[in-house]
Length: 150
Image 1 (tube, rainbow, N blue to C red):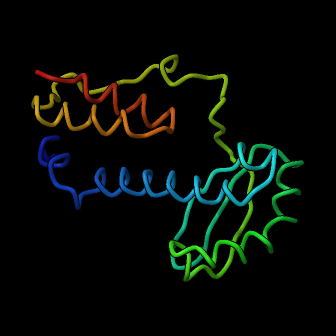
Image 2: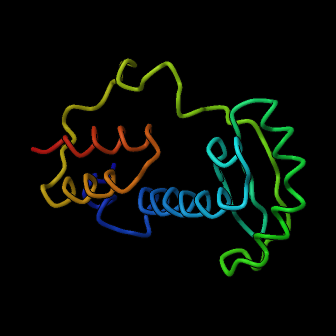
């Protein structure tokens, strides 16, 4: 098993790519929300954008229907934006893990290995990254991870 410091300090590793993807999805969500009308502009989330295909999630069936009707116009508008010049398709889904979930992560019991610790540098980098991420569950997880200092 690799020490956690080696995993965290390399930007090309799994955690680095996950946090980069989360930040990119936040960026894409802000752009997409500019082109959507109420109530879609507050309750939609870009969950994936790869190879010109985008997946947008919303909270319930009513908003999913509205989003599906808005996709043709959204596709036209996003293709004009320099960030989405290669956009081919948009798929709409229901968010299976909504932000306003009644179960908080802190209420779940976690069984972490108590012998794993972080260096001060790694802990501060994770905490800084957690402050930049708006996704509530990922933010909480990163803050809990950053507290594991020797």
